[in-house]
Image 1: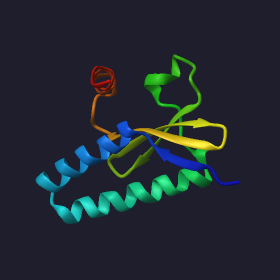
Image 2 (image 1 turned 90 degrees about the vertical axis):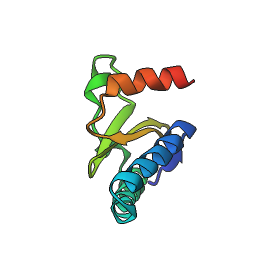
Image 3 (image 1 turned 45 degrees about the vertical axis):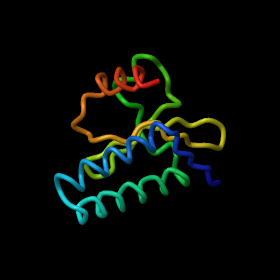
Image 4 (image 1 turned 30 degrees about the vertical axis):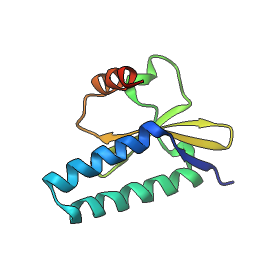
Length: 108
């Protein structure tokens, strides 16, 4: 069974910011490689959404519908609802998730 994968606006903004940072600091070729890995991971979510693990920042809240996969040095945080995977966050694995979530809440 295949799941529909939907990028939320927040994740689209994350991708734009990530692209700008990587191309500026590491070059277009590095971005293309990173984007290819991200795309492959997202494609796999449509087929295997339960493959990801619950992020440790969310485990204590018992929100098991939220999961993450690691793609290169990036992290994709998503939610599974019925037959749909909603991608919430795409970020560098080295980013502090608590700070990112606070920033995200303030952006809304």
